[in-house]
Amino acid sequence: MTLTVKAVADLAGISVRTLHHYDEIGLLKPAGQSAAGYRLYSQEDLERLQQILFFRELGFGLKEIGAIIDSPGFDRRQALLAHREALLQRKARIERLIETVDRTLKAMEREDAPMTQDEMKELFDGFDPTEYEDEARQRWGGSREFQESIARTRRYTKADWLKIQNEAGEIYSAIASLMDRDPGDAEVQEWVGRWHEHISKWYYDCSLEIFRGLGEMYVQDERFTKNIDKTKPGLAAFLSEAMRIYCDRREGK
Image (cartoon, rainbow, N blue to C red; front, side):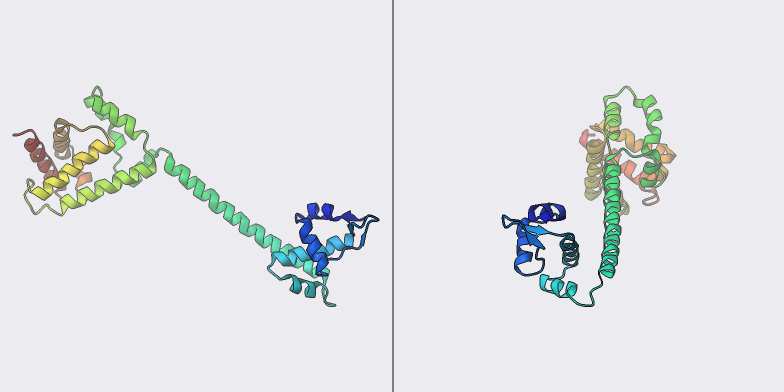
């Protein structure tokens, strides 16, 4: 059985021009030709082409490939075994790449998905702000701010919560570093303003009345006190007083 150059090209996944080139340089000369002058390739030609493509895949030049497969010591069986081993290694490498892509996709999906309660606790070092939703609903459930906060936070992904945590941590740390000053100090008040903006940005449009109430809750509710004081002991009380001064000044008191 013989095949035309077009059939061989389709079978091997290469171009007719490539086969013509191999013929011209003597690397793969077809066994015969048709009455019309078309190249015809035998089974032996296909086996030789297989070796050519294998060595080409390994990065050998065409002259080197010709020298290898025309060498008297060339062992076709050994070449096929080497070819098989190379394919297995490539398969393993591709599978590892696929696993890496899959892990990356899962990570991206995880970042875009809402956080679980366990993840929330881990992120906030054991303090899960969503745990107090029922309590907050009883106190402020009818307020616009509460409804707005619930709607916003339920949409947040892990990436969003990481941003919130990092931003809050920066503000807490800055205020904690200023605790040797008066709570009404200009720089302290600037950071308290940042805290007010942070709440409005991520949770709800925080009025001065609500902001004042939050400050009071930081010292009245030991759970919040304990969490805030993780940054520095006494921070909750200092921040609460600084927030009171902040609200007084903006309300003209």
